[in-house]
Image (tube, rainbow, N blue to C red; front, side, top):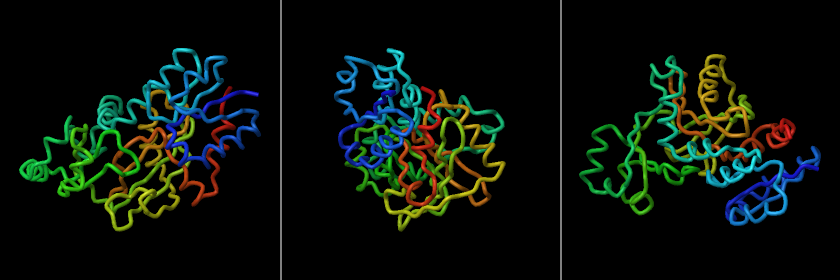
Length: 282
C-alpha cells in the first residue's frame, strides 16, 4: 500500500477533520494510506521512510520545498504555494505569463501594493486612496474573506492589517458574487457561483449562498489561459476565483491553492476527493 501525508496546521486540521476522513476512506479503496501529520512534525515523521506523496495543506512553501529536495511528489509544489498565498505576487506573475490576447483587455481589478498598511490608517490616507479609486483593502496572505475590508471602514481593518503587506483594489460591481472554478489536475472540474448575504464579500464561509454554474465555451477558453500559466498546473487540486461582470466577462480575483471543498459536497453530486485520488499516478 502506498503512503501519503496530509500536512496541516493543527487548528486547520481540527476544522477539516471531515475532509481528512474523506481522503482516508477514498484512499483505502485505491490502496493509498493517507495520514494526517501536524506541520510541526513533518520532518520527524519522515525520518524512517519517506512517503510516496505529500499534500501540503499549510500554505507554507518551505514544507513543499523540503520534500521536493528529497524527490517526494508534493501537491502543491513550492512555487505555486508561494505565489498563490501572496495575492500581489500572483497578480504580477499573471501580468508576465498570461497571453497577450488576455492582457490587452482588463482581466483583473486595478491593484496597488502597499508594504505596510499602517501608512494608510490616517483619515487623509484613506481619503486619498478612495479618491484614487481604491475602495477595497486586503492582506496579501488572507483567505476566506476574513482579511478583506472596505477601505472607508478604517476602524474595522486598522488593528487587523496594521504592519501587514496589503493590496488596494477598485471595487468591482458584481452584486456581491464571485465564481470559484475548481481545477483538478489541470482541467476545469466544476464552477460554483457564490453570492454574499448582507456583505460585499461572497465567501461561503461568511454565510453566502452558492450554486453550480455552467460555463460557456468562451469562458472555458479564458479560464484555461490562467490554468495553463500556473507552475505545474496539471498537478493537484486548487481553484481560481473570478468576479463576474454584467457583460458576462470574468475578472481574476485570486488562486486558492489550499482550496476548501465544502460547498461541492453540500450543493453538488461531485466527490472531488475520490476523483482526485483516482487520478493520482503513484
